[in-house]
Length: 206
Image 1: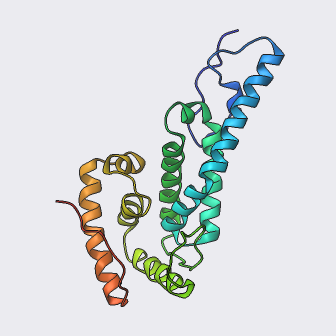
Image 2: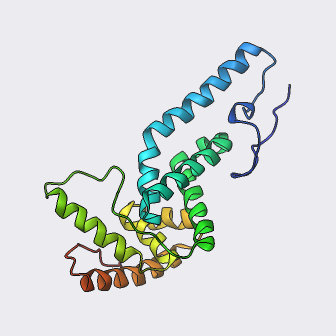
């Protein structure tokens, strides 16, 4: 029996990843094995990367509840296109879906609701109160940036993507990432200075 063809684009309704194997077998046992393998791979991916996606979403939107919603939507769309996602870098694919979802929601909702709760914040030697205050200041500073500037800064300097990876996730050129990030970092430093925050902000590269 021939392959059913490539999966539909991310975000569209369609059958689960188990139906998009490179070769579809007539043997029901082999079909069950293929389904179990695809589902197990996706389950392992979610277990390993859901927290990373959730933190990225939180940095992008500044609200824990909305971050959870965006992360779940991104995972659903990644599952729908799992054969394509797992063929490359599943985390990069799901992160790109997350950024696209954020762009769509930003167009619908212009105002940010910034809160202090951050999922899975890294442990530090500083007091919890100091860390809490720093996160609050960072969110307020990020809230002064435009949508594009905030996405660029988050992906480059808070998530840690390279310029090429950030450009791919944002769907823009590397040059656009450089120029946007440079301007955004300058604005971020000014916003933090006005807020009295002594947080390290990276300098843009020439």
